[in-house]
Image (cartoon, rainbow, N blue to C red; front, side, top):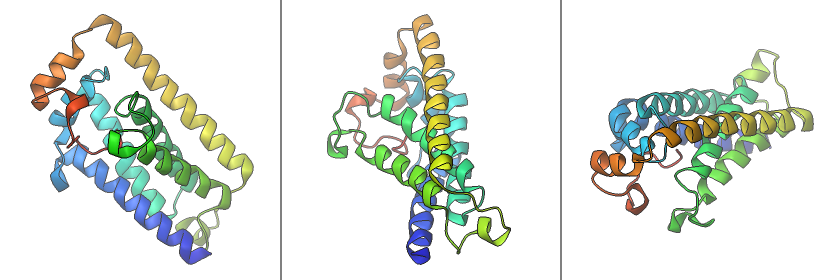
Length: 191
């Protein structure tokens, strides 16, 4: 079982860290802070560069911590919060399945992150090595509740700033070269 947990943590954490690097630095085919910021403004997340930075740091730090099994509940919180925001912005109104742009991918990543907090990161983790491994239903529920609260906070800010500037979709279309809803090559799917 511990080998399976390690594999899950490395793959999911590594991919999320890569998504963060795409947003922050433009690596791995990403758009960097400017491009991702413009894209996020199209979904009402203003200022876009700030939200691109927050999402990128959450994915990069959360992914690295998750892969290492270090501060696993915090890592899962960062990941799940970012994925919940993505589900309500980039993937909203597109159904469930990812081939239609739906929230399947981000929901799966959030569930994996929270699920690992329930079972714990396993013996092949830095949490175990330093004696701070936490897990269980209470940890999982707390992580989920905090992720929902964090995402709700981000979405509340979005509503406040969107009401002030209703032309966000047009701005994102100019920055990214088209309507964000029509793009198949979204910057760092996941946020």
